[in-house]
Image 1 (tube, rainbow, N blue to C red):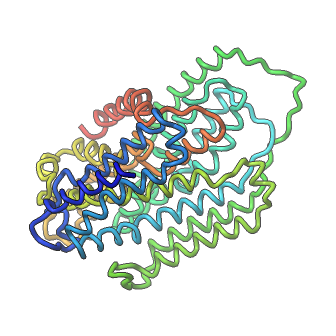
Image 2 (cartoon, helix red, strand yellow; image 1 turned 120 degrees about the vertical axis):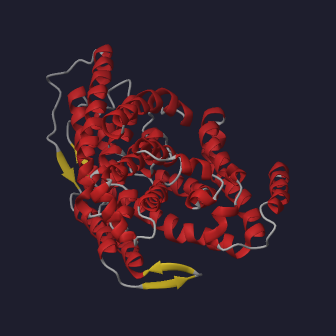
Image 3 (tube, rainbow, N blue to C red; image 1 turned 180 degrees about the vertical axis):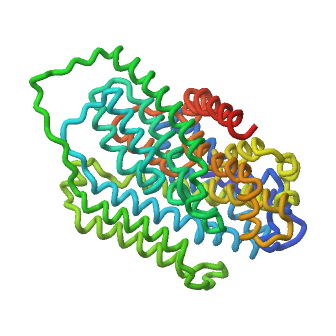
Length: 473
């Protein structure tokens, strides 16, 4: 506790150097925030990366305190230095981003937990590849989180007899929790944000070639790796083993899943008006969507037998872990997002000015989406492209002009935001949830850096170089 107070005091004192003025508007914060203001964000990322590796027992029992430490270490000096502007920024990210984010995750997690696949299903390389292919397809229609939560438990149970399972979960994160969500605005939040800002709903079908190229490469590579391990394990099949026909229990939850999708779509098409809450501009349709999502989750809990969830080995820990950790992540990412939004007027002006070609947009959007919330990152670079090519043109018309005349730039931004969310555990929300569920089943998952060094850098980054050469060079 004493060390905590000492560090907090040090950051209090350093907060005086944030600005010579007592307050700034929330819109202008990105122009005055120094780059070192992202240090608490770096700190929480390093904590997520290092503590589970060097102090797993401590992390399991105290990750909430660590998240709160970094969140407060940033928020308190931030509020002292920037007062109303800082308060507005924090309220804005929690009311408009964090709370809807957690409501959506909770609803999908709850509803998917009521869907149980019974029967004999053995995880051969062929069956596993079909699982990943199915999940990749579903992700664009029920969201990466929805598809991941529906399929991860049956996928794991089908492979309980296998010795090596880590690679299966990693490729599941690659394909189902990320890359598969690139075809519609329902698939991943950045594409939905693009839809709200004037990108036609089915325009994202332009990413079909990118999706096919990336997913075919990953599926073939997965099959080769899984086949290799399968042969090593020398698994013998018992012809006398009782085979139980496959059956879906709790199938009525698919109706609630459709209700969630409908609620998300409704908030995109329906314009019911705005209102202010605690000084934050909010929309009626978004609150209606949140209520629909909560209702779908409650209906799932009420109408699904507890025995079904028990058999599904459903627990609340994964969503609890995500909610607590991302509460700290969302707070500490405020300066990073603000600096990005400031564009050429912020501390990253040099980076923003250097982004010119489609390849630059692909890698800049993707690299930042690997660690930051990919939705505002997508919007930042979309606005950067609109400002670069169509300054002064109203947003809706500028988006249509970009699609008609320079669509490769929008393809690069969209693919970067969705694909590269697979680069780290925090790149997309279902990544962390899939990891947590896998660990509940006793599967040893790689650490934060282990995931990157063993899997995402040698496999994904290499494949993204290929995507760049084929589509964005």
